[in-house]
Length: 197
Image (cartoon, rainbow, N blue to C red; front, side):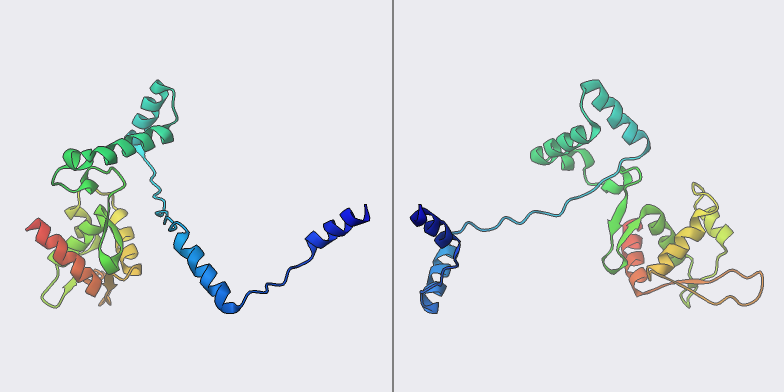
C-alpha cells in the first residue's frame, strides 16, 4: 500500500530532462518534419441581403423547409464548385446586379459604393481647369435624378472623411462650396472615366 502511494506521488513530480540541448533541438526538428502543415483558414465573408433579395431567399427557404442562411450557403457553394458565376454574370460587373451590395475596391480609396463612384465621376467631370468643381449641391443632385436631395451631401462628406475629396473654401454667402479630387480620388476618377469612355 505504501508502495502504491509512493508511485502516485512519484508520478506527480517534475522530471528533469537529461538530454543535451543539441539532442533536444535535433528531436524537435525531426518532429517538425513529420508534422502535417497547418492549414490556413480563410477569413470569413459576411453578407447581408436586403429588400426583395432577402424576401425571395426567405420564401424559397420556407418552401423547402430550410433556413435562409443554409440555403444561401448551399447555393453559393454549388455556384463556386461548378464555376457558374462567370456564366451568370458574364463580362459585366457584379456590382450592377448586387442590389445594395455593390462596392468596388479602389486601392487607397478603399471600397466605394456606386453612389460614391457616381459623385466622384461628377466632381471630376465638372471640375474647372484649376481642378475645382464649383457646382452647387442642388446642381449635383439634379445630375443624379434617381437620388434624394440628402444623398449627395452625405456622400460628399463621407468621401471627404476618407480622403478621396477635398473641400475648398467658399468665397461669400450664396456661393457653392468647391470640391476637388485628392490624389486617391484622381486615381479612382481615371479608372471610372476609362470605363465610361
